[in-house]
Length: 250
Image (cartoon, rainbow, N blue to C red; front, side):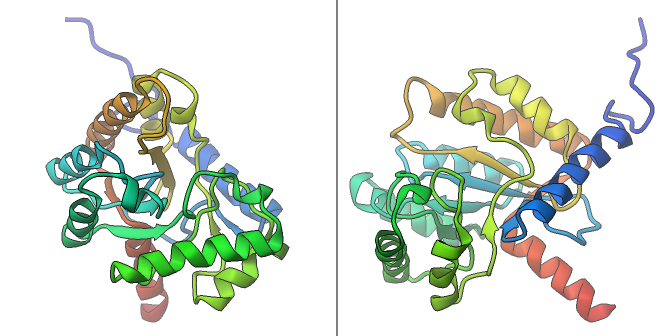
């Protein structure tokens, strides 16, 4: 049998050079945009923060099933208008909390946050926040819909409602919204994963074509590949707590 050759660096074929390159990109992004959180600094264990945007949807339960199968946790950045538009949303949201996941603010809908004026943004942010309070949540994290932010316009709302004072971004570009190659995307994420990386995939019934099917395929493949590398996925809050605990010990 022909032996499969892996580049030097690890048994699964990933290289330390690639991992350090991905980490360095996140660090550079934060230097250029200091109000954005592109990775969780200081994480030493093989943990990445998995974030799922744009739910709930008719298939969020299948995402939760996969996370149970792989013993993973995630932060769900939800659109709160979907609570009323999605049959069974209340049950799914309760399941998220019961299974140890985290629910975070992604605005009421998927309109680009950067396109809203200051007052409109403040009103929509508060509307989403109040809806999360109604289901018993006190969200810590915010990711602007559309993935772009204006700190001068948006940061006062985070401060007013006691959120973490940076906008949650990601360590990798969210290709799943555009490219129909779930296996390639999963490989890209898993091969470049590093301790403290923030990964994003997308839920949401508003997606065109079979994108939700691709998300589920990409998520299963990603979880398998990360497990092979000795990684596990956790919520953003868990990773942040890990670094805070390390700081207290130090």
